[in-house]
Image (cartoon, rainbow, N blue to C red; front, top):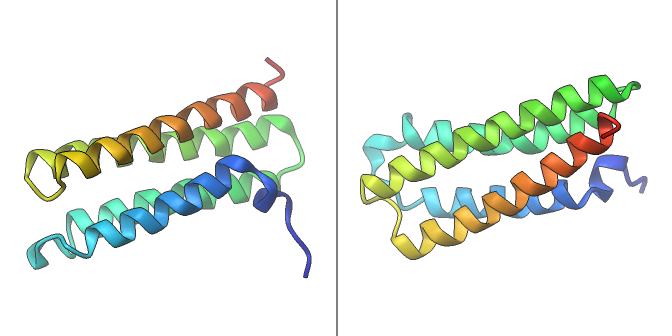
Length: 120
């Protein structure tokens, strides 16, 4: 089986774990949030992985950096949703702190990748 370039990226691998954690965590959210916060949180999280993968298919560094920037923007959306979920009592403080740490790690990795792609 062929391994694609995005699969080799540590940031994509880290995001893949993050997606699984978010899906597991949101199973416990109230049913009334299923089509609201749960759906949006899951979609934003998988968008990070989608855009990392799509960016690797682009030929120019500028195009690759564009998709890395979109992935970063999705991560910021996820962080905002985690804050709100914690405020609403849907996420325990301990889980929130652990997810924030993983999000910060992914943020740093995305910034490093974008800097590399931008030649900086």
